[in-house]
Image (cartoon, rainbow, N blue to C red):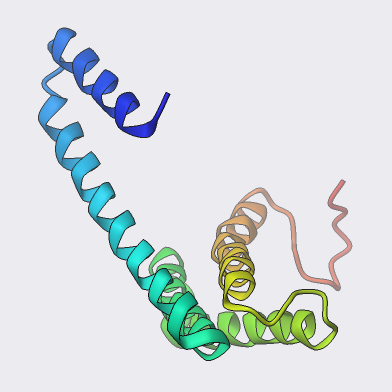
Length: 149
């Protein structure tokens, strides 16, 4: 079953169940389709015309968006936007630089963009994981005597 068929089935189910969600589902599906088309067009432009430089630019844009997400999720962190920007930029640059320098991944946009996106998404989830550990009473610092097992 294709995605559009699943959306139509969901809309029909919401309408049949009188959940009053059919319109919201339709609007959300239309917005998602437009966003997907826009991202697809951007990636096509990068893949066809800009090469590795465009991929690095796209990855930089991803990092800028991600640091805002991290800063919003960790408001108690002193200077959250600056801390997030520096941390995610250095972490992503070091990881991608190592992978590219050692030849682990190809220096093509079709490889750099998805691998870089996965690295950035890992950095986005890290503050939440650390906060969860701290709230659970686990000290995540390397000098901690608390065991993680």
